[in-house]
Amino acid sequence: MARTVQPDRGISARLGWRVAALCAGLAVAVQLWGLYRPTAPGTAWFAGADKVQHAIGFALPVILIAVAYALRRRADGRPPKLRVLVTVAWVFVAHAVVSELIQDRVHVHRQGDPLDVLADWSGIVVGGMVLWLLGYLPPIKPGRGVPAPADGLSGRV
Image (cartoon, rainbow, N blue to C red):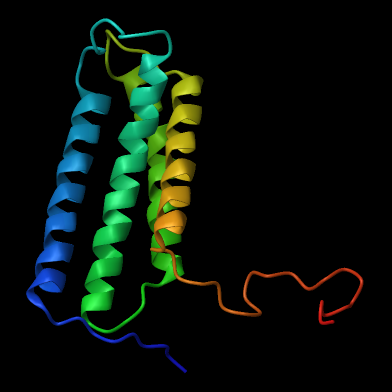
């Protein structure tokens, strides 16, 4: 049985997901520009600034895409589907690896860095945690993805 939520047909709901989608598109565009421009960024503000930029560059699009998707579904009276949000995360996980391979193989003045991939993945995880804290992740359905207790007990008191 499909779970429904009360549809929000107000102007804020219709405008909210569109604004979030526009921001998500801009975040992805900035991410692509930063990852695929022919030269590496200039001087670092502090040691490790590059890794922080990578983490933010992956966390922000994941957060904004998920918020736009969740707001759109809620505006139609439907809850967001966890599998869609997980798919978005996996696309960005794969993109982190692909972007470093392209930087290493295609651009003369850049090289791939495995630590950048770890920073990207960290950003994706932090983005997921932010979504969870803000309540944008749907609940996990009972019996799906939740292993049974090893001792056979149900946990009831």
